[in-house]
Length: 344
Image (cartoon, rainbow, N blue to C red; front, side, top):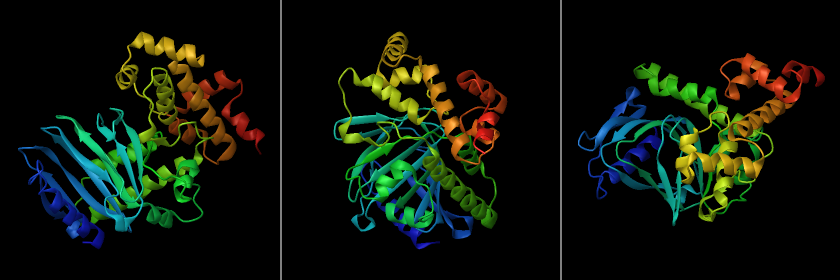
């Protein structure tokens, strides 16, 4: 077992002694000693978490647990010797809450991606409500190690570039879109049935592919929206800001946007006020705005990447390329292939 996983094992042993979390996990080794499996105490919940290290100083947790009681714990860069820290989560279910001072954020209850940046020693509270199914894949790594792994040639996009350049001095949160490809890899990781070395090789390879897809997508996004890097301790709470929060959510999840009901829950408004307020503020309905974001990003990828139309359609959340092509023609009056040809 790697030193990194061994360190993680010691931290779980300490976690199991905290008040309210006594013996919450039973530990055993998996993948012939290359992973750590945490089985939840049946009195406190169901399921397990498997932790391994697909890259140097990167832990990957495959999480499939449902807690019988609600609980709150810290997440972040507690160990000062590790410096700044990144947490990247690919979630297939949600409803979790994150707290910083008096501010609260709740993630989408459907497939979503979450990225947290923690400066050295900074933490926030993570709350899992009773009965919520925690189903996803989470990566933890020191920020400097992340950029060392992916090197100087990667196109990191604005958020990662600001982190890499040391321009962020407080906890930041971002919710970039989780593309269909990311969703598929996440599902394959969580459904892996291999054992032993075969399991180790599959999980490491798929984990690296998932992170690579994430970095590629962050770098390939068009110009950043106003609230690209969302600073938790500067969240506004005045009445008018809920519309800006909705816009922010849509700009970070347009490939798989939350339902109308989920948006209402997030901002505490009914459907009529949500729909009427958004259209009055931005001149488009929520569905029209989401389509506009998809088309703009599709246009950007057609002009600035070598991805096929089918791949772009898939990344924009369309199950069939024909649906993307028809929507694109309705938006711009020309087909994607015509745009691609004009760039040659």
